[in-house]
Length: 356
Ligand code: PBG
Image (cartoon, rainbow, N blue to C red):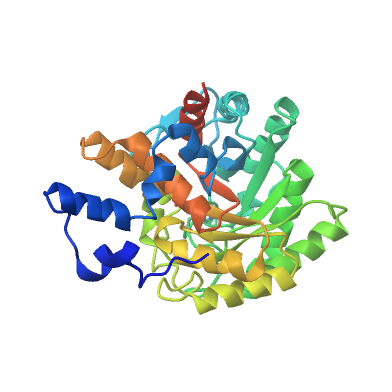
């Protein structure tokens, strides 16, 4: 039954009633307080039983940056604990990820060389294609997510090919479809286009199907904002645009109705999962997308969100572990089924400790 807020039990809310110090008045409070929400918060086991949202290591995906070479582990300054890894090191890291119970990784590539058309992004012996093949061979049960985009591979750092200073949509979509097929052929389990070109989900679906990959799902970065929180990623992936910015194709942070339109289009074109990115500054959008479409929804807890927690923890201003867990839980609460996060390994360790 809904509580009756006009009753005496809620007098303290209506009148700003302060707890008195005299015994009789305390009796009064006791008599008037039928509802005491604290009852369910007192015992740890009971708190856990009535918990509405849970975070499991099985919902996390660890991003990984792969670069040429052997035995290379280059730390990323703005993302403590994250590295650019050569393929052999990435394989080692993938084994560790699996041991921690994390079911998947998403790969980003730093190519040998970049050009106007981002050729290494869709070359069969490009950095990501090779990484996918080797990781699949060594860790067959790990879910391999392939980010499909050109910004890491183009000399100008934009997410597609240029006509003048514009990113040319339809030409880029053709290339992205090729990239997706190359990655599926190399062993990608999930194709995740992050470029924000119009119509790319449909084109990628048709290309995958034509190449015999009808079973490979598309997790579309349907709702991706032009965000300042990608800063550290662009250092990590060496993919900052050399001129201008990405506001001509990524979304305006002021918009949420537009997020629903983007998501609807991608579902129509055949997306199997929707992705919202960044996560924490856009929890309202995440919630709207999940509520409107009820399809598996992924949140990308991006590089800048990770960097903020680490910077504050390093300065001694926050308990980094606790802030991380609260942030991840809030992303789940807002509606994410899956979270892509650089915190995945640390969170897995804390979740294990909490169980032990
Ligand atoms: C584009 C891509 C970006 C990220 C994931 N895919 C960067 C961008 O759009 O500039 C950012 C992820 C992060 O900040 O952690 N391929």
